[in-house]
Length: 357
Image 1: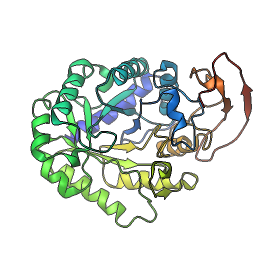
Image 2: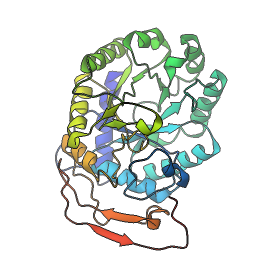
Image 3: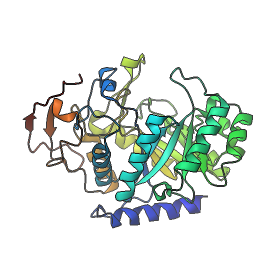
Image 4: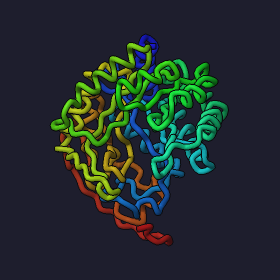
């Protein structure tokens, strides 16, 4: 399995070069995949947000917004998105559009299946099995899902399901899909290892400078996953703040230093990929997407770590979002690990639609 992962990393570099977005210097061999959310409607930005996208308050239905996200991600050295999904008419429509955008630019996708409901309760096992079959039948054949030998699905929330339930769901799928668990402890992974193809730990609320045992925990998880022949996707985030959702943790970004430390800890656990938390989870403030509060700070930090050219924010299409024109659009020019403010352009536009905020 790990030999397959190494080959996949080389293929991702070649695909990025073919898309005309290859960095000037050699890329790091471990793929970086950013968690990506397609749940945004115009009203989403009115709840639990202290920051908003530089593109404006977009809807996840907007194909031009998806294309801009992919361009920026590639420029920062990101190889693909792990798309948060379960089968609903809205999310299926949006995933179809994202697949089309990714295929045009040789960008890769995986899926994080949301196995818990809004109240963090496990979905019925029959629903999980049905949704994953739907993905297998309707989406998995697209070449954008060829990061590894088979399309990759991370089952979020496996810690809420019994080993028997996990085995029942995954058994008919593993011939055509790689199904990863999302266990948070090495011993818990060992109990389900025979029914899955690896583990992806979504650990956002961790302070790399003060959380006891942080690096050791990642390293042990990686060792146990590899001992069972699985793929290990290690987490890294730029910071965290979910206090508007009722949380209490605040992990400061420290001007990019938190992301640098978490990326280093992830690599130290010998991952098959780094799971970057996140492209656009604005409610928990782990977003690396260019934003009004942070600009492209996180993408610049990542680009430096990945030896990528960095995001080009001057001259980007500010009309990517149908809702962007309702507010103010700020354009930055950036490069390297430090946000270099070369120009500030304030464009005020008025349209016939009301501001969604």
